[in-house]
Length: 586
Ligand SMILES: NC(=O)c1ccc[n+]([C@@H]2O[C@H](COP(=O)([O-])OP(=O)(O)OC[C@H]3O[C@@H](n4cnc5c(N)ncnc54)[C@H](O)[C@@H]3O)[C@@H](O)[C@H]2O)c1
Image 1 (tube, helix red, strand yellow):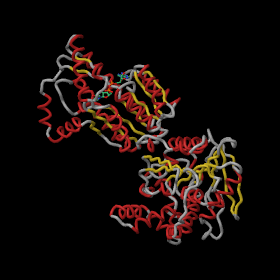
Image 2 (cartoon, protein in one colour):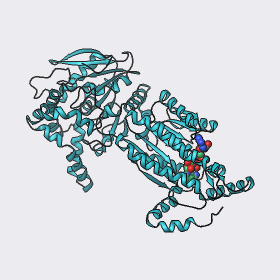
Image 3 (tube, protein in one colour):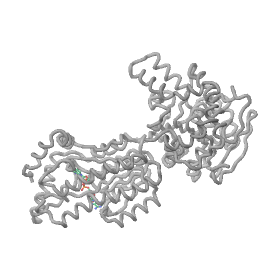
Image 4 (cartoon, helix red, strand yellow):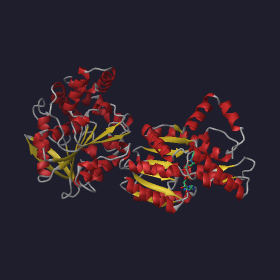
């Protein structure tokens, strides 16, 4: 039984083999062909295919010897890249005879698709290729050659690193053993291994054909790997634009393998994703977004447009990012930085006009889509409504930035319960609501994500000038650390950002306890002047926020004074306590 609900099936005959081909979506639309890897069948795409079928004509087939396609006889010599290319051509002749197709390959599906996109006989038949976790054997051969010929310590390290990850390739070259292992304990335990080690959700994985598929698939390695690595083709240049998606925690392939790829691919788009090897099953939303964007851009004319701009475009393109307090300062700069990286942005602020402006500019800067939402983050019900609306209309958020915050100065004895409530409601409760509502959606989706909370250097630097504000930020820091521990197992990172003095509007809106309105105005002006003199731009904090997500950093002090205070808080807390006693300069 297929798990691809609603798929239309047909059999395609080629070179004595019968291939099982499934189609979804309207056939008049651009055709996307999904090629599975080892040891899989086309069902590995069961999460991605229906999502893509909303916009494209999606075609999947069981590679020869796998799933419900027949196997060659004899097996030896039946799985060469030439024969796999014959199969591919037979499939596209059947499903899209007049229009080039967009190929997407994972693992061995990607290895063979590299062959398709670099041999002459498919020229003009492939519009684009999206590759995941499966290099070209020719490029790999040249990569090894290059490192053997000029063995610097770094290059030898790269060789050894990939060598250690390739243990299974050597194992698969041994005769009979792999077949026995797959028919025996490995075959039985495979779904559990995928679930535990690779974090692939269990359930509908079709295991019945697994031992046979895996035993056949061993010939993919035996028929091709040694021969190609020894004598890689010198002219293996891609004749279509390529999108390379690299999972950063792939146990089988090193990222370094793709260092030289620009040499072979004139029109290359790189993407990275913090995930393990089986991304078609663990990250279907992100893959669908990237494939959709890539295919559309190629269809709309021009691979030139495919390359996203912005420093982190390879990571955030197409992702859904929600920023609170996005109407001004750090939040606005953060929304813009994500927009530049090609993310879809939801700008949230209690100031409707400011949020709308940020959304509008985000679109101009590079966000494919951007929306403004007017919400007070301290309002529990409003935040619940926002979370429901975002999930229903825009999707599950990939990156959440809980940034909205307000300032409050003045001594503890001057701070009224009402003052406390205001600052804790926004600075702490706002963050709690965000984490609780959007964090749950991320966890339930099961495809990872990241939460950034804007704390402050005040979180670890005591001062007699800001007791309430500092307390709220210390709570945000600890909340972030606890949540980070809780969500780590689900691939969701949590970062606390701790800036020092940043030149934003916060100084002119900050409240001061225990003084009259006139004195408050005077202090606001004075602080604004001091922060202006310091002049640390919010854009730098935004950059640190994106970097924190990319590197999954726990606590990020930004600005030299914030880094210094962090160091003192650990090495010389007494010194920090002494500084805390100094009369504030306001
Ligand atoms: N500026 C600094 O020196 C500095 C230093 C450390 C930490 N921070 C923190 O950075 C974050 C951003 O501050 P900023 O400096 O960019 O300030 P800012 O005043 O320029 O921007 C804050 C934005 O948050 C919005 N906001 C305030 N309360 C809100 C609420 N209840 N609901 C929704 N939106 C709300 C405001 O309308 C404003 O657009 C805050 O959490 C702040 O505490 C700032």
